[in-house]
Length: 129
Image 1 (cartoon, rainbow, N blue to C red):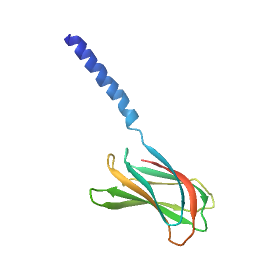
Image 2: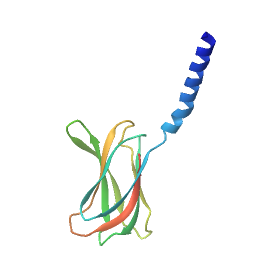
Image 3: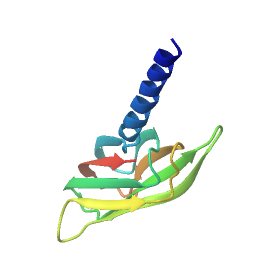
């Protein structure tokens, strides 16, 4: 009986250790945008110590720059910790930027911000967090 219990416990520990790397893989969130000033992407719990944003622009709409703000979520407020920055270039899409200002296990909000000038930008992207 003791032997069976130890064997089952050993199998459970082995299985847990083998599945741990799968759960440690980075999460990813895809999104699209069609906006003129500000758009919330969402709030996500970081699964690693960096966040990478990849953007594919379908229209810059006359603008040439925008950011994705990263806010650390608190109980009553949020604090801006960093920005992912994207600038129009002659090489075109894909645009990528990363930040190491996030901590594994913490929640962060992500928002796209651009100049409030009435110009519309359109595209799609993903956050790997």
